[in-house]
Length: 236
Image (cartoon, rainbow, N blue to C red; front, top):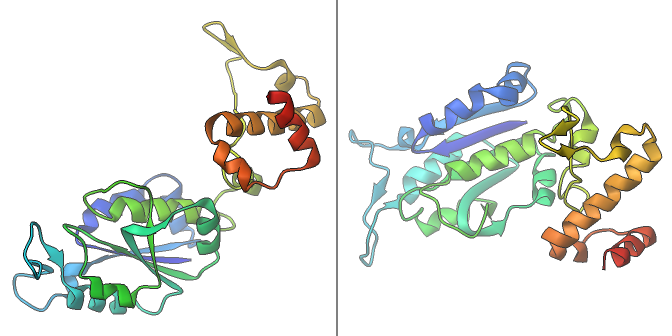
């Protein structure tokens, strides 16, 4: 998988790719991350990538000619994604779809946004939430992390992400590790019983419980078994 991140501030993005798991999988060649400075597509000596908005108003707008030139310079891609508050809400399902692509271009806006004509040169717009940031860089990194971890070989245990929150349609069950007791707080006895079937049942029930308590809206779309529905009734 290749990611091309287009930004006016490449040094905000590059350090994120040089630590932890991303650094290792990039070194192994499992993914490739190219960070492109949009100002490299400008044509004047001042590297001007933005201008005042037509019709007046506060702030600056990123130029369509510079932005599109940067998109085209990134090469052919399966998806050209503009990070935008007006885009579709990013979900695990979208992450799973994007993880099957070979090349994704992520376009990071800044200031008041990008000239609307640039929207004709992207394949989709994505928002990571109903709030406004200073730019699209964090959104691009969210997509990078959420999708790259789904690529075979990036996470050693495939089951790790298959059981993640949202991957199953539910929130994840609670996890525990050593020490067995901390300030009077213990670990559920079932988890140290060695009874794998009972543990699996407990985890499923806990996932259902957490989802019902914290994100009941997810239950409307989740694929639930008859047994799941009985357990949910017990919670009532």
